[in-house]
Image (cartoon, rainbow, N blue to C red; front, side):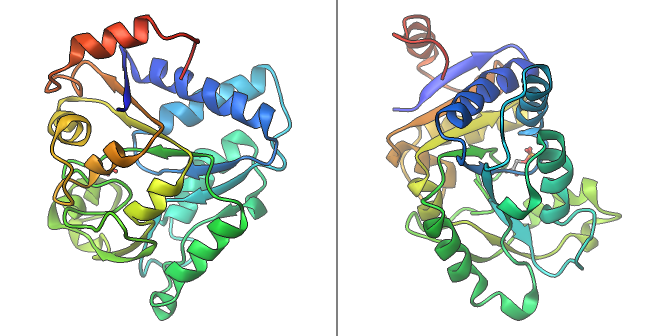
Length: 260
Ligand code: PGA
């Protein structure tokens, strides 16, 4: 069962997740981080950046793999996930850009880029901690409903709902790419620890389906129920459709060790 932790702010969620990542890096200086884009993980990167600024540790050997990338945006496009990860995580955390990989969104290579990305993750020894958001469609990474739980990094077609959600970053919805490269649900299952964050009422259905719903590829977030070490960090609004709230609170209050 996933550990479900309630927070009263995104900042508090970021602090919890950042403490876990910091302690991972202290234990394993070449830790492999699974980096998510979008609004959700920003508090994690901000809290970790603040922690590193206040009390520096060596992050020069930390490695990172992005979850996904749009297909077809020109190199250097400000909304490519290479650019977003660089802006939101790599620069503020002081990571070495040479240690950070993002799936290639070059249309010329989409048939092989997934295999190459999987090989790179394996060569790095796998992802130690994967940060995840969840979309209103229930997607994790860009694994839209129907994605196989065995799927690995590959090209996917974005739903119109996801394109509409992401249109806020582009001049219009027509500028949002139709295709992406995304780690598969099978790739995500191989990471050693998953931290899934969600905030706001628009994520309540997706969180309920992921944490307590039937395990179904129609609800890609439900893949977390197949993983042995998952932490779900949610605010009250995103948690509002969960049934077992009292038990999650009780388990967290009586956790035998601090933190996630
Ligand atoms: P968001 O996106 O963090 O911007 O809400 C989450 C997602 O689509 O996975």
